Length: 87
Ligand SMILES: [Zn+2]
Image (cartoon, rainbow, N blue to C red; front, top):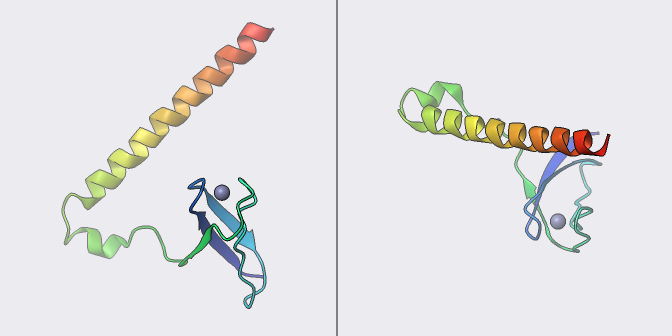
């Protein structure tokens, strides 16, 4: 079965689902909102051959990844400190 990606208009989450080609999912399983999902086209996130023609795009993407890393690290630290407090 192919994998499809959907974006929820309500909670903004990306949902990956496995289902038949003639099937379309519309109801968000995360926030329980019917008809909230938009099917995403399965393309690679960045076309590397094109980034050289557009200077700056790679940097923005890098920064985005770095920012995400920071947020993830912060969440990890928060989680660690929380579990530490409990014990
Ligand atoms: Zn949702």
